Length: 321
Image (cartoon, rainbow, N blue to C red; front, side):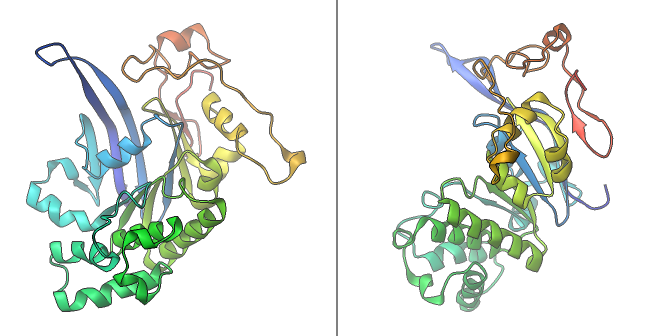
């Protein structure tokens, strides 16, 4: 695809389960199990699902913090897993990750200015004399003041720390930012400020986001396309408007039914899923969702549904569609 910045094809990430005196592999946790998606330049692709669905593992595997088990990841047309270590290092500044917990991702002994500027020196992008000006510029872009540069992380609120995390990713002038639950630890009012900041930075800097979240109300405000994950697999992808207007997979419908609405009379009928989420180390046969799906058929228990386009670039993996 000509305008694709990131292409993920049949990505898998299995974590081995070790047991016994010889520490042999006795099974695998299938955290990410054969998913594919494309993110175009300048768009925000939202990845949603319950906790444990594999969203964060996707983000870490895409950026090669965690190594894949199988599949292909292309960034700007280049296979990231085919790159030698030195070439991958040169590519790193163009792909940045914003972590969920802004405090644990910052070294409490390092001043904020040094934490933001160290990557610039590490990659040799600027001289020591230029670092401070570059850091001050990015702090201002993220809504922080110049005097914050010499403070330590414990002197900031949660929202300010997340702005620092964004500034640290932004200072390298990346093309792609992977935001892993960046607002889930913040108050609702602060969430709105950070979401508006993401929007502003995208408009001014032409950024592309992979936005990972379990909160569909946040994703609705920020993302142009959305992918829904369940137990390591992608079950539905569509544009934001299409997904909220016409969800097709029963799991997507259940997630959307839980999204709060501002006008009570527009309240959706709540769909409560029964049963527990299966273990990713022993997923069900056929459709992984059939153990909790109120519409499951015999076919769902035996045959894995094809992830296919049902029209208008709306993809779904369900035998009911």
